[in-house]
Image: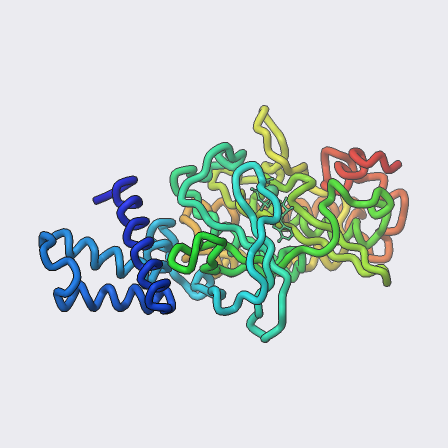
Amino acid sequence: MEGQRRAAFVALVRGDAMAVARVGQLDARVAVDRMRMAVEDGSLGQNALKEDRELLLEVLGQLADPADHLYRQLNLKITPDTQLAYTNTKVLEKPTPLTSGSFASVFALKVENADGVAQDSVFKPLKATEEGWVGKWSGIPMDDPQVAIRNIATLSCAKKLGLDVIADTRLALIDTGRGPLDPDLGLLMERAPGKQARNADADWFKNPAVFAEVTKLQLLDHLTGQVDRHDNNYFIDVGPNGDVKVTGIDNDQCFGKDLLSPSDIRPLRRLPFHGTALPPVIDTAMAAMIDALEDDELHAMLDNQLSDDEVDATVSRLQGLRLHVDQLRSQGLVIEPAQWADPAMQARFTAQNSYIGRERTTHQVF
Ligand SMILES: Nc1ncnc2c1ncn2[C@@H]1O[C@H](COP(=O)(O)OP(=O)(O)OP(=O)(O)O)[C@@H](O)[C@H]1O
Ligand SMILES: [Mg+2]
């Protein structure tokens, strides 16, 4: 039994199990176990056909261990990076809908993290297919978009480069309101502090540290081939003592196999990508991070996550980034971090070559 009929049957058995749990005042999982035992010892489904009893057992198995079934449904490989980091037992405050984006529902919740600390988080259930993505034009297959892997690989690249611009992202199995026997497998991220760039204070776009941090995110996106970094897909926080934190969210649409050059994330040839051309200025620390990253390290990190042509395209983008760093260096545009405050440097950032220039244009910062 497949498709809608199977889904309807699963819902029926789930409803039965919930009823058993209610009547017997049992935990829902215990109720499922009792039903399994009853089918196995013949006290339940006695008169059913053998194949129907087998189907019932299979469905009860799925209810008892939904993770396995959901990983298979998403065609998601279980690796140390994709194994479950959070389940309902770590939820301190239940998920509430945060917003409903154009294509996904997103929930706010509080969890106990690995260090035992309460963490404001965001949970985004995963889907097995996608539609309406700009990433389609970068070579991401819509029938198997591997959203989880793209998010996790983005975080790995950020960590490897030492760019602290992506929130910690892990796999989680969470009840978002349909009950304990029908959880979602999804991505659990730290909740980004501050405001989305679109709603940020115009003044922030003059702040030297904001220039530096946003440029870090942009560099990461050139490496990962991120084509969806519009001004709602990253946050900026300027704390009371001036600390600046930039956080990229929604790291779904990246690593498309067709983007061979780091500047391919910009809108070009009428492709509606949300990136820009390469940054006109970077600082010495950023240049050192890019210079230090070797092709082999990218392979070691990404080979068991992405497809071969997706990894090859990433290596190709890294090579393009190295050339860009060399070019900037030869033009004296690899600056010391203190120079981010220089208005002449800031003026080089335009809507075409940088996120910060784009946001300054939108916010009319001159
Ligand atoms: N880690 C996070 N921290 C804070 N807010 C978040 C986070 N993740 C998502 N959000 C909020 O939820 C909204 C939708 O999330 P996300 O962008 O991942 O989904 P989406 O469906 O792809 O949305 P869209 O189509 O608008 O890009 C975001 O615009 C943001 O307001
Ligand atoms: Mg978004």
